[in-house]
Image (cartoon, rainbow, N blue to C red):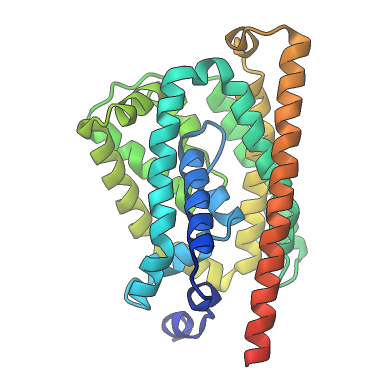
Length: 310
């Protein structure tokens, strides 16, 4: 009974807030960052969606498409446009220069994730924390770290075809539903990452159409399950996400940033390589911390207005 009633009673201040060009452009920029997160090794578009407070509205909409359909579409259109822009633009970057600047790009985005951790921690604890939640966080962090570390040492190659690209799209979709999971890392392990980036850059329909279909089908199939889990186990799910964020962020350093040959790719000496990575990490942390503070302030103001209105 509660399962069918919850969508109608859940507040949707993001849909009721006045629309403006500025708000539309902010969601566009968020979409671009999320799109980049989908294909940047070590990152998760789902994590960035959580960080930008896009994840909950998206999952609730996909789980209950008929509820406030046009309002949700209006809200998510700039996110979708930005996501496509982020994927296509970064695919061009990957094909052109990502090999050399991979460590710098990855550390910048890891800094971005680290800077938003206080905001995520606060959001996860809104309904309190228990020993179980801390245990979930720790287990999730260790599990994803181990998976990424083992996967980073694997050398598997899969020949691409339509079925493989459908499965790859479903894997990316799973990264949307399960924040903290980085599909790009698995695509690298299977030798598909560069081929995917090149196919998207060249707008090859044999690549991007099955990728898109696999992603959409996976998200639609699992959206209801994710929405139910967050509605009934809010703290546990958010601490699971936090664990995935921590474990995957730590694992990126040995598997991507300091992987064998990373310094040679950058064509830098060890001190310059370490300095450039450190600078990019700090820039990411500071920028995202400031951004998340603005996001939290805006959310608090919106909740206060809604409370006084009631």
